Length: 186
Image 1 (cartoon, helix red, strand yellow):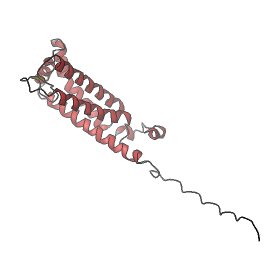
Image 2 (image 1 turned 90 degrees about the horizontal axis):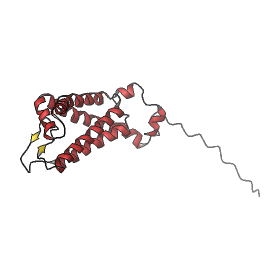
Image 3 (image 1 turned 45 degrees about the horizontal axis):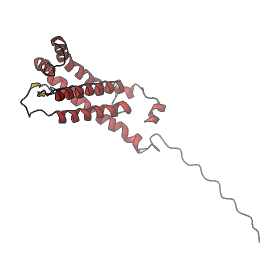
Image 4 (image 1 turned 135 degrees about the horizontal axis):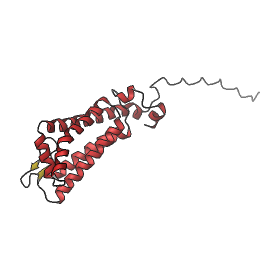
């Protein structure tokens, strides 16, 4: 009786993953989540800017209602903010410099939140002026808490684009601005 152990046949090498195969669920889903966040910001910023462009005097009035700046600064902000919002929306729409554009959009939301908190803390009764309205409102008609939560949500969308800027249908991707090393970090 022999006690020799028969060797196992050599294992066949595992097939190498093809492009896309072996990717984690996050790597597959993340670009689409970013696309949705990007397009949501496009909608918000585009609508806000365009609604103010149609009535620049109301935009200036909305800025004045915060009682933070002198008249010249109020007018400058009131007239230029709509164009700035539309420019951010267009950059996000085409997906150019998405990470940096989202960072600016997030910073803009933080400024809006600070302005609303300031108005609330000083007892002002104003409309936020976010979408082409603004100015004084009757006591009890303010929605500061809702406005702040909404802007926090928009800042969170911008945060998604900042952290994971890779998305389909963007010039960033078409131009190859993300190396394979950076993509693996996502």
